[in-house]
Length: 615
Ligand SMILES: C[C@H](O)[C@H](C)C(=O)SCCNC(=O)CCNC(=O)[C@H](O)C(C)(C)COP(=O)([O-])OP(=O)([O-])OC[C@H]1O[C@@H](n2cnc3c(N)ncnc32)[C@H](O)[C@@H]1OP(=O)([O-])[O-]
Image 1 (cartoon, helix red, strand yellow):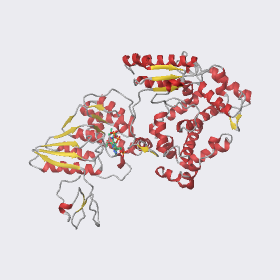
Image 2: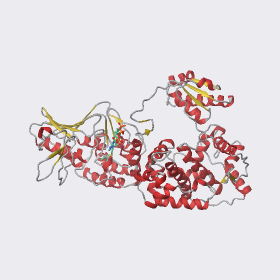
Image 3: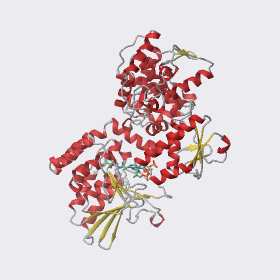
Image 4: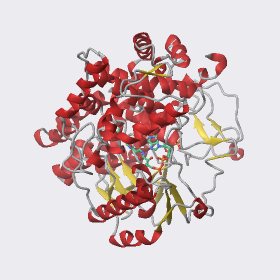
């Protein structure tokens, strides 16, 4: 708190906004913004961050810990002191708890989770509020979340701006409400709403409750305890569950993801940064390429009401693209993803063309990268996809690889993705590389430019099995353009015929090997990307995977996942695969990984080793 107590330090009126450091047996010094005194501090009393003032017969406890009024130790101390003070003050008839600036407290201070725990705890403060003989009112605005909502639930009354949002987002940090939220919300809002809010973590407008989402077992037990046990017992159980979750790898990964998203938002470039950048209006755009990805980007632009040229050199492809866009837009209107009005307007905003000249004045052309290895995501996903194909050539089936990777946490397996994007896309990328190398591949090709090559995808391409668009690919579908993937015994026959022709002895492949070969090949490339300076920090890679590939948030991202597995273990397994697959350069171990593993470097210090001199 920038405490309201009049400063009694030796500086008196010269003191600036002070934080008070109480030094026992000596006078109190205040450490202002402009006066720093050499003080021998025997201990520091927490900086208190709750403004206490009395207006009329109201005591106002205003939390002042910008930007989100997180309930740090200092804030908890201030609330604790404040409610005790208000309870004692005879002139005070009621107490208001509120937040200064943007919001009512938005939760516990996540940064404190990895530090030693310090009382007072939220429930202790909350019980003091609840037991206070004077009405305690929570005046809510902004985002009253997590511990903030729990504090509000201890209050006797909760007044909120209708724009305010409340919620228990702890589940997104791999946690559950740990300050009586699982016991009090059901008692206030009923079990069903409580389960929905606690399991989904959604923000709920002050005036309405959200509908059901995914329910987490542990959370369920805690919420259920509010029905099956008396309050005190339920509180005990909640605390136990909370401790279990706080120590879990999932919670650490989700807390990492929370801060990683914010870290990468603070980007710096040679010619500017996130503070100096000024957004430019985009009034016209163009997309070059009418394939699946190009058409998807056109749909996004049309749905945002932005005019777009669709440029294609081949008239047939252009017309196919227009048909695909029309059907996606119609589907989006039917599903209510876009309004009928946007759907109607889209037709007037879309301009097909085969003339690059039409694009000369557009504001923006999203770059559709087909084979650029320089892009982080493409470069890391290359080995991931290649290893998937090799695993099928050696003994696994596409459905087995997909099942293992979906169990790992991916929303859709790699072979279902290939059917979605098009078997022909993967085939054309490979053919472009072969052309650049002056190589003609056949169905018997085993090596290309000294590197292992698998022609399985080529086989499916030549059989016209292009994926969803033709109703057959690595799976079969209910119709061309269908979405329901069914295992196809013909694919198994194609794979076995391929292996027989090339004399490959198929073998049983474990799930562990599948996860390692898919993930460690991609992680190894991630460390090489850090070495090459394509990404500034591991968070860049992880957030790219969380958003670009829906990588499971409870693993944090590929680089955080490697950190959790242990770099030494990951490095050893990459060396093992490098030894066993010498014709796959993506298994050459990253120098940065080798160095970090050898020195057991903590993740937040990795980049200190990424420059050439330290490798
Ligand atoms: C006991 C109890 O049962 C349990 C155990 C808990 O309570 S667990 C905690 C539960 N509460 C949460 O999960 C809420 C998490 N925060 C948010 O959802 C959002 O912040 C926001 C409230 C909707 C505002 O969004 P924003 O877009 O306006 O700003 P921002 O950019 O996100 O955030 C602005 C700055 O504030 C930082 N920050 C935000 N919330 C924080 C928190 N709870 N603790 C510490 N720092 C936080 C954030 O890192 C950023 O800092 P920097 O990176 O710039 O240095």
